[in-house]
Image 1: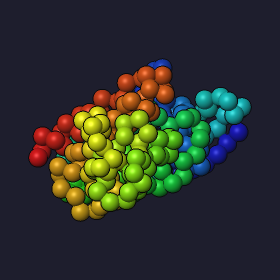
Image 2: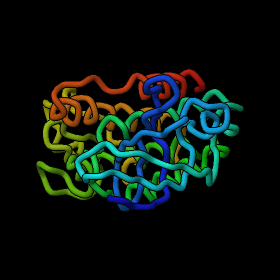
Image 3: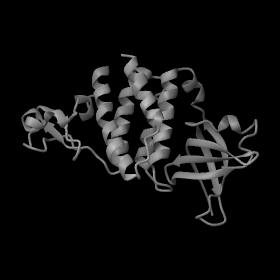
Image 4: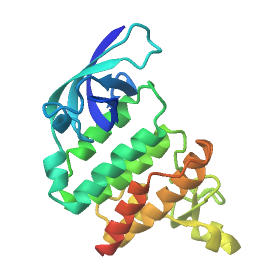
Amino acid sequence: MEWRDQGILLSARRHGENAAIIEMFTPSQGRHAGVVRGGTSRKIAPILQPGAQLDVVWRARLEEHIGSFSVEPVRSRAAVAMGDRMSLAGLNTVTALLSYCLPEREPHTELYDLTVTLLDLLEQQAVWALAYLHWELRLLEEMGYALELDACAVTGATQDLRYVSPKSGRAVSTQGAGEWVERLLPLPAVLRGLMDADREQIAQGFVTTGYFLENHLARDLGGKPLPEARARYVEGFSRQR
């Protein structure tokens, strides 16, 4: 068995004396693990940084085996990330969430393309938080937890949508909220596609997407806690306000 693709390195960990096990996210193979021989060497270890764009060839005797990777660097994002605390936190958040929730060996081509675009924006921190929030919405959708934010779940209205139902993920208007308002999540305009949002709106958006990541996605993955990287990024963003 053999395939070749280009993808994003999600994680790397030492394996034995001089090898590493890496996880890649590629458009055709999804999240896929394999062994890199000599992965801890001075030549290869600097290449195996989370977020790096790599050209990889995977080989195994049988498809169900973990197999081995040979890797060639395409683009490193380490220099950009290391130069800025929030860039590094953002990079770690994206790679950790993908490693956490993507099913093994299942393609998610559109999410992959969106992730490449997002990571290539790391140098533009003025717009990155907004792009990342929209990426979280798409991640929820890809995992089967799409939020329906175009009309009120109670009245059917398409105006004055201010809240999100924590159970259904559907929008709720001011009128539809009624006595349940304190139990609802915020629906800032940024979650409905507004591309000119202030930091307060983005922070409110993180509250809502975070709820569904933690209480729906994580629950259905057996209750595994979300990667701490996500909380660190959101906390760091909030402190900047």
